[in-house]
Amino acid sequence: MHPLVILAFGIVASSFFAFRVAKLTLNISNHRLGLRGEQVVGLILDRISSDTIRVFHDLEVIEPGKKPWNIDHIVLTSAGVIAIETKSRRKPRDTAPDAQQGHKITFDGQQLIFPAPMQADRYGLDQAQRNANWLSDKLTALNGTPIQVTPVLVFPGWWIDAKGKGPVSVLNPKALQGFLAGRKPVLSDAQFRAINAQLEERCRIDLTR
Image (tube, rainbow, N blue to C red):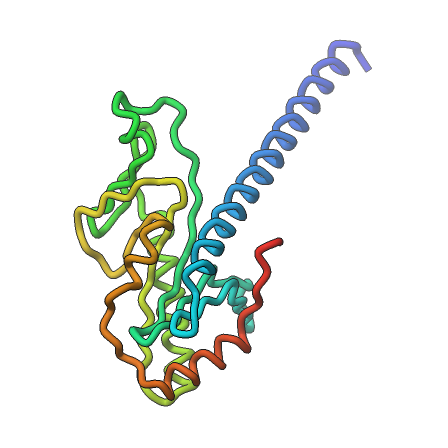
């Protein structure tokens, strides 16, 4: 084989493997970022948990014919059930002139508006809604009465500017305690105990994964 052909093959092969390594490194980094975000939210929730605020982590869902998935966190209070989806996202390197703007997410009720050069999208909103709908259906079936579940999307490390309201609430983790406070009770003591037992059976608590 001609030396130039061998050299060309080597360059192509090296480029391919360099790309694969870079992609794998990015995937590992993203996984660690996501895991850290879930841990931060979990620890904040654990600090505010009590006999009347029950916190559950990592409800795994396995259904025939579907890829397994999970609900990151669930909070049960007398004011109802809340399904929390956690999303971690890196801030842009080139921040806006106002440093605060560089880590602000504006939620207009329909989409998430990130600082430039990031594009606006619905990152996590639809997933949070699907999680809440699924959990509502399951709890309703188990209890024989409609159980509403409120979807919440949490972004650790970001300042949230909520300019509009939508079916999903978007929060910084530090706002969770205030979000849970002062809500009108909707569950009876019997319903609270029943749902608590059902969630305890389904959830596993492990923040060290």
